[in-house]
Image (cartoon, rainbow, N blue to C red; front, side, top):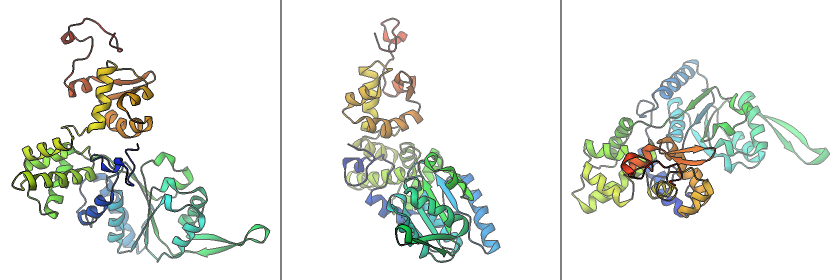
Amino acid sequence: MNWDDTTGTPAAERIVGASADHEDQAVEAALRPRTLSEFIGQERVREQLDLVLRAARARGATADHVLLSGAPGLGKTTLSMIIAAEMGAPIRITSGPAIQHAGDLAAILSSLQEGEVLFLDEIHRMSRPAEEMLYMAMEDFRVDVVVGKGPGATAIPLELPPFTLVGATTRAGLLPPPLRDRFGFTAHMEFYEPAELERVVHRSARLLDVEIEADGAAEIAGRSRGTPRIANRLLRRVRDYAQVKADGVITREIAAAALAVYEVDARGLDRLDRAVLEALLKLFGGGPVGLSTLAVAVGEERETVEEVAEPFLVREGLLARTPRGRVATPAAWAHLGLTPPGSPAAGTGQQDLFGT
């Protein structure tokens, strides 16, 4: 089971998953800010990007190519649309997996208008031939189209109008240096602070015509894993609960009760996260334990535990990866309300990490 898949598997239903499903995409289109001034969070990125775009407009030129990196759900697609809006240019949206051949990219590039913004999501997943074609297109606004095959093949140079490429990636380290170097502006999107997410929740509630109190917004923000997409998804689920179980007004109590129904705890952990922690603590005494053993204990695939559950648990300081295996931190014991083996409260004397 792949908990990150968004194509109809049970992973698509993970309420704290950062990938967007079809419902998210539809709602996000209505909630997206249209200008940099409306965009919440990412203060340094907004300030730097504002300078880049203002300077380009003052010169009457297209903006430099932009690379946005960061976890899913932080606003990379939204920023690409804002770049197009700020430059008064149309935007073309595609993704790396959709470009499997150089000809696919050549067809897109040759149809661009002058000044148009091309948003290339998951740019690190583009095929190598298309990637090499993109080098020349970004630097010289030219591509060589190969006509024919074998010894009779001919490369025909095709001039392109100036355009702005906005690339988005969740794994900047997979981009080859020649591609990264061709971006004039590179920004890394950080996870949001709770106060910023509260502003996001209030704005979304206003656009969705949902009445929400300040403590209700704070409760949702605190369980949103630092990700606006998750905050908006939790807001919609809490809205549904408030309409069915209460008077439609979201308070702290209503938000907490609603998210308890969806198994999202006060720290943003869901069923999978807690299953990993409980197995690590209760079955293996806090570790160290191998990843494969831990995955078997929770009934999930090894990749699911490593790629879906662990990143957030590590970021929250609840789990540590060591050469000997996975180890729970004191914060993990405290979060689940358990006493670590060997502590005075345990009443069993000194114990090692294996709980023996």
